[in-house]
Length: 242
Length: 197
Image: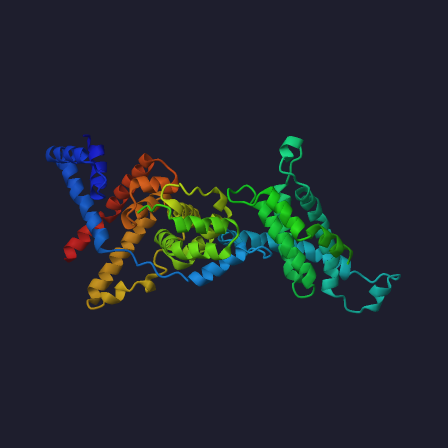
């Protein structure tokens, strides 16, 4: 047995994973090699130190709270909450969100706070513009942007590759849609609950599409069924016209 | 450590696959402490461990169709693997951010109270434990995970290999390196501790 093997055998022996033959070889090596024998003593002292200073005991998890979150995320009809992984990206998302808010602000400013048109009866009649009304064109544009993607999935068939039909996705566009969706949902949560509910459904679908490459992701068929089950395309058309 | 899949458990898995939330809750109740315990050992704080617990049971449910009842070690081992991988992901992210702290839940440690009869010794133990945690924190995420599973959780190297899907040889290599690194880091503590005694 070589010195390197002996050092490894010491560890396996401590954990009871060294076969009898290996043990004999180790003992024989340690009798002849003072360096390895000293090193074994030091290794055993380290193990002893670890044993006499055990780590903090595991506390009880708040299992009810965790279960309620698990159930929430797995219940159909509910938008999933932010995943733990997202928290680590919160700051980068916040930065991107700020940019979007500024862009949306400029857009809304142009549409809502621009000088009243001399021929626009509503514009001249309403002295104070309402932000919710100003978000309507933004919402309509956003829904229009999402429609082609949802249509792709709504028309998906399992033998798509055989028929030459595939769903192609621009990853950056998808992330932008998701972010814009979150912003709009939050902005409309109080003033337009119906729109917020639709955006909740869109949020769920966009996240499933975004996670499509993960091993545990929902299949395209499941996403298609989700779109159909919730009448997303129908609601999307109605909401655009309101 | 490994368990054979039980008939009752297989029935629950079938029901959960069919969308039975109560069956999934029963499996959660049976296994959540173990998953949480492993995550807590790896991550060192309750909040991250609860996040991992949540993520594990969401991922496991979504991947339930892929679970084979003949999987070595059964459902417990399968869900343990998912939990271990979730923990490893978090550990890597934390390692990158260099914010790993194993002292977050120090208040949860009842042993602190048990040692309070000798304040000097208690402080000494805390310091030693902090040095140990620091040494563990300096290991690579994989070394730390493998060492924790072997040393604190009592899994064999073969079981760990199955759990994190690497070869047994790779597990041993990481384990040897982890022990070597700990020996280097803790040798000074050993000397100091001996001097105090």
